[in-house]
Amino acid sequence: MNQGSAPRAAAVSPAAAPPRRARPLGGAVAYLLILPAFLLAALIVLWPLATITNISLHDVNRFGQLRGYSGLANFADLWRDPDFIATLWRTAVWTIGVVGGTLILSIPVALVLNRDFYGRGLARIIIMLPWSVSVTMTAVVWRWALNGESGLLNSALRAVGVLDHNVVWLASAATAFPVQIGIGILVSIPFTVTVFLAGLSSVPEDIYEAAALEGASGWQQFRSLTLPMLRPFITLAVVLNVIYVFNSFPIIWVLTQGGPANSTDILVTYLYKLAFRFGQMGQAAGVSIIMFAILLAFTLLYVRLVSRTETPT
Amino acid sequence: MNTKLRRTLVAWALMGPITVVILFPFAVMLVTALKPADEVLQPHWWPRSPQWSNFVAMWDATNFGPALFNSLVVSGFSTLIAVAVSIPAAYALARMPFRGKGAFRQFLLISQMLSPIVLVLGLFQLVVSLGLLDTRLSIVLVYAAFAIAFATWLLQSYFATIPRDLEEAAWVEGASRAKAVRTVFLPLALPAVAVTCIFTFVQAWNEFVLALTLLRSTESYTLPIQIFSLVAGRYTIEWHYVMAAALVATIPVAIVFAAMQRHLVRGLAAGAVK
Image 1 (cartoon, rainbow over the protein chains, first blue to last red):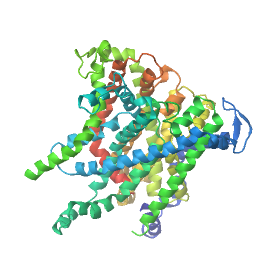
Image 2 (image 1 turned 60 degrees about the horizontal axis):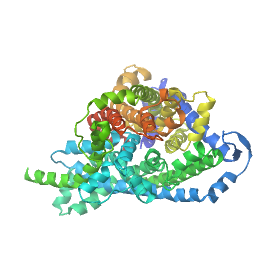
Image 3 (image 1 turned 60 degrees about the vertical axis):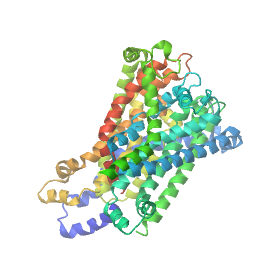
Image 4 (image 1 turned 90 degrees about the vertical axis):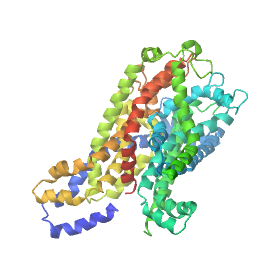
C-alpha cells in the first residue's frame, strides 16, 4: 500500500513543493538510515549462514576445524541416518499439530472475547497469561506437574476420576509427544488470539446488524462476513506460528531432551545434540541448511499466496 | 441486560475448560512453592502449613538475584539497540523512495525467518572468534540483531499510517527534516515504539537456546538458563525453590502484560494490515 503511495508523492513534489534539501538527498539519507540495522543484522545473520554453508560442505572434526572438502557427504550421511528421517517426519507432525490446534482453538476464543460479557477483561487477561511466562519456565513447571510419582497432574486427574492409576507421562514418546504438542498449543494461543482480536476490531459492527436484518444466521454471518475479513490475519498468524513452532526448542528440550532414545526429537533438538553433544559438526551444519531450505520454501509460498490474494483487490 | 447475562454464561461455559488448563501450571507453581521441603514429593494439593519463607530462602538457594540482574541488563540493552537502529530504518521504508527498498525488505524477511537455533553453530563460531564467549555482550548483540526484522516491520507499518501532511506542514514553516521528525513525527509514533519495545524486551527475556549455548558460567546466566540449570541433570531437585523462583520471575511480566494487553492488540491491529 505504501509502495503505491511513494511514487505518487515523488511525482507531485517537484512541481508543488520547492525541491529543497529533502528531495535530492532522499536517496543517500535513506541508505544512511537503514545502514545500522542492515550492518548489525547482516553480521549476525549472513556471516553465520556463510559459516554453516561452508562447514556443511566439509569434513569437520569435533572442534569445528575443517579438514577437507567433502561435497555432499554430510547430507548423504544424514539421509542414511534413520533417526534423522524419523525426526524430519516428527517435525512435520509437531508443526502441523501445534499450529493447527492453535488455530482451531484461537478462532472461537477470539470470537467469544470480542463480544461484550461480564468479566471479559478478566477472561482476556487469563488467555494472555501464558504469554507472560517464558516458554522455558512453562516447560519446567510442566515437567514437574507431569512427574509420574509426585506430579500434580496425575493427582488432579485421579481426583476428578479421569485416571485410576499414575501415568508416567514422560517415560515414552507415546504419551510425552502429544503432551508436548498440547503445551505448544497452549503457549501459542495468546499471540494468535491477539492477532485475531486485532483483526476483529477492524470489522465494523453495523455490517452484522445489516446481516441480521437480512435474516442471516450466526453461522452464515461467520462464514460470509467474519471469516473473509479475518483471512489476512489468519494467514499472518499461520505464517508466524509455523516459523516459530518449527524453530521451537525449549518445550521438548526441557521436558525430554528429545528422549527417550531420540523418540521425541524434532529438527532443532536433533541439530543441537549433533552439534554440542555428539560433536558431529558437519552433519549439524547439514541439518541447519536443510531447515533453512524448508523455511525458505515456506516463506516463498507465503509471499506467493499474499501477492495472489492482493492482486484482485 | 438479560441477553448480556445469557451471553456471559455461554461465554464462560466456552472459556471454562481452556481457562482451567491455562491456570493449572500457575496453581502447580504456587502450591509447590508453598510446600515445606518434606511435603514436596507428596502429590497432595494443599500444603499442610504454607511456607511463605520459601520465597526468601529461594533467593539464595537458586542464585536468583544475579540471574535476574543479568536478564534485566541483557533484555534492556538489546531492546535499546534494536529499537534505536530500527526506528531510522522503518522511517526510511515508510517515507523515502530509494533503490533497493524491495531487496532490503526481502533481507528483513529472511532474517525474520531464520531463527537463532538454525544458525546456532555459526553464531557460536562467530562469538568465539570475536572472543565474546560467555559474555552478556554476546547475547545482547545477537538478540538485538534478531529483533530488528520484526521491530522494523511493526514500526514501518505504523509509521505509514501517520499522515505525511503534518511533517510537510512543519517543513513549510521552515523546520528541517530532522526537526520535523523530532517534534512532529516521533511524538505521534510513540505508541508503536512502546509496543515494539515490549515485544523486543519479552523476546529477549524469554530466550533460551542462545543463552544455553553462549553462556557458560553461572555468573552470566540469565533467568531461564539459571532455572533450567536447577532442573537439568541433577539427582535432587528442590522443586519448591524452583517453583518459587519461576513464580517470582513470572509475576512482574504478567502484570505488565495484563496492563498493556489493550495496547498490544491495538499495536498489532495497526501493524498487521500494512
